[in-house]
Length: 118
Image (cartoon, rainbow, N blue to C red):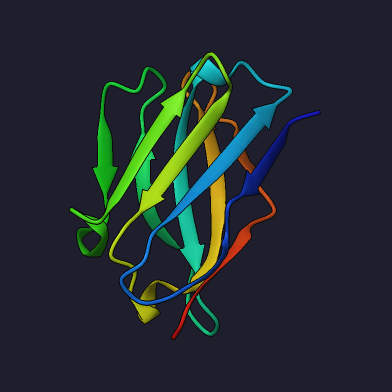
């Protein structure tokens, strides 16, 4: 059974930082590209960042470039999202997403809430 468990969300002031983690079990982690998505109330889910299975390549949504950093530790089956200079518009539920390199299987985590407010 595949599980993606996010953690690290919470309340932060504008300009602050948070580090999200997503621990994966039940899959061969190194065979999955990993992504973070987010969904704010009343808005569609949007892609935040992606990292390839080996960690050799990353991609970010334009509004996150320079502020967010995605990384992974394949030895720990964990992907991270370091978020700096947070803005109120970054508030959302952040979801971990895995896509298999070979068969394209997709898995989602349950999400972690990020609130940016003074």
